[in-house]
Length: 387
Ligand SMILES: *Cc1c(COP(=O)(O)O)cnc(C)c1O
Image (cartoon, rainbow, N blue to C red; front, side, top):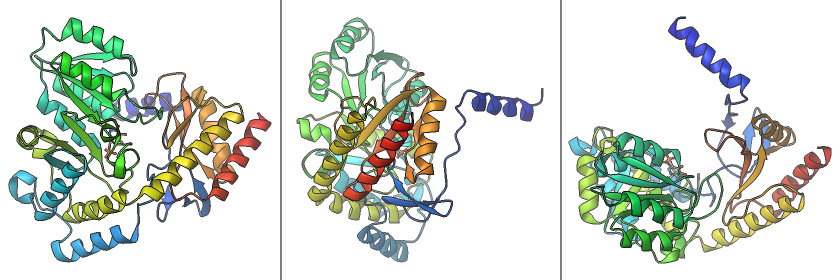
């Protein structure tokens, strides 16, 4: 069979397994309401938790930077791509999360893969939560470190793994999401900090979904828990409403990453307007206590009312509300029924989540109106009643 036909076959197999993905195209801007195929629908699946994507102050900052500094950085940061905007954004973001320095990456995926590949190698061990984000998993694989997966948020299991495998490893690094992206629950950060101290391991915390949402001024869950990880990963694509990411850490650690993280070294720097927009977003995020209060109120309401409908909503806190459906096709049918009635909620299937745990993943936004949540719950109620 030719290469083209083999891939055609593979795609057909995905289709048969209910795993082919064909996301709708959003026409126009992101927000609580989005246009899909000419129709305005309610959006309950964006990570734009604070509703800042498209905020006028962020747009103004990006436009001004575009006028003054141009559209592209022209090269990798290590060639001629390091610009004032990058350095200012890095300093501000590092200060925000209480670290000495930070390094920008073009995405969270690039940040995690680059950092892990730089920090650990074949003589080392990484200890990774079973529900960590794919970018952490891929970073572990690329690093060729020995990978030990501990049961989700299970400190006893982690300790057992550290006790057996830490001694043989040159370096050891414990990895965790802080707010888990598909389950909406949080990592036991204090326990992880204590264990990593005791076993002389580093701690890397990915705050992609928590930054802007949890902690004083939205500084994240580590800040909320009083934990200082060795490396803190933040993304700008979620609460910040932009794109891009950063790793914040000590000066030594950040300097090392600037030298060795291949996704930083061998990749064109993010456009300066992105760094300027990030600075504008940062000050909005810090000032967003009202938005955070609304976000938590909305999420708590969605959680409670979906549970009251008898749906399987696992315990959690914050803006991510999963509804476990189980079978892939059923999750997608539920999602289609919602969209037919004007509510956009994406279904999540393996390999993003474990087989048999396909789900709807709802997310609240600070900018949802109560009446919009009323409508979403009404639609869920109709679909549940119809079975
Ligand atoms: C979204 C996400 C990433 C990837 O960030 P991008 O900027 O979207 O590439 C990394 N880690 C976690 C935990 C995420 O949820």
